[in-house]
Length: 400
Image 1 (tube, rainbow, N blue to C red):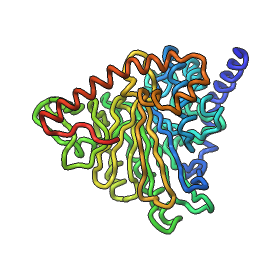
Image 2 (tube, rainbow, N blue to C red):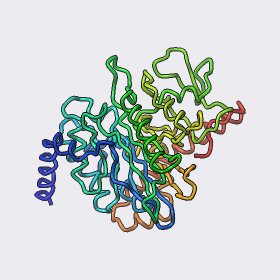
Image 3 (cartoon, rainbow, N blue to C red):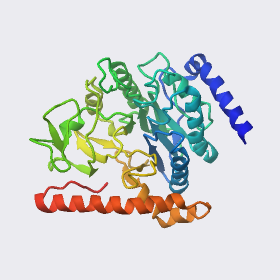
Image 4 (cartoon, rainbow, N blue to C red):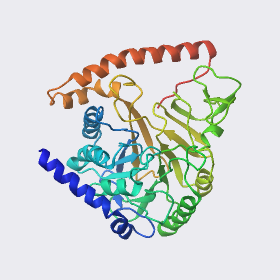
């Protein structure tokens, strides 16, 4: 087994060394990934996994839970949106990537990857080299956009009709960068925005009408704070605005809200026009991000849902009620809307179907740990929400 693992990693490292020429040649000029197709039932299911932060101390538990989630949800596509396996060396990162991707490779589930702020921040390796690791697996449909655009991992995934090659939906994948020159979080750059505008218009011309879609990236857009309510001071479930000293925000009763804020949203400091371009085009229904690990919420703003998903790792000693994954479902007969739900690890391991899947494994200590820790975490959160909503009349938790 060890010799097989070493052989696999050697191949991955070799692929990464030749990534520049091979992947740039493979990437299409319009940065369109392999087309996916709605199922015979007209449905398409996406498993959104983000912020796994895989290291030697959590990879076994995290990948086991992710594998069980794949078996339980049976997704048509896994979307990975950054901060996945940021180890200190490229060799260690290759090991973590292999442990994660084997989950999907063994199940033959297509995977689309883009990156977060931690994926290459230490300078020991590039995003392009890491993308080559992912693209060494048959299940990856990801694109390295080479020198075409800022970053690495900006592309379009077309969804075709179940019974024809008609374009029915688009999945937009963006590398939202890591940090700007001043040390703030980055955001999608101007050239990526221009690419989206052109590709969106081209898709509309191809289809003979508007083609709706969803966007996926790591860092949330700055407009999240326009969609929240500004308040005078910090309070229960009201959080300081990043890069601002005296601004605090919470859910606005006037907005359409989903889920719950558990920490301050952390967008990039500068705005390069991505959200406004999408609002103007009118074809993106929602933007799904990670980055803020315990935030599972959505806010509707200018016709777009700004949605954050939970960190999908398992830390072992905390957050079994605030780590998990998101499922997104599409219907080709209703392409102007989508359905989504959040699954937290505590609820996941208490699901009867998941228990049946887990019973096939000999070691059940992980589930026992999640149930034990999660019981107290859930009770504390529920009491906090009840107290605030009872005494202030303000809603702080909406249906996911």
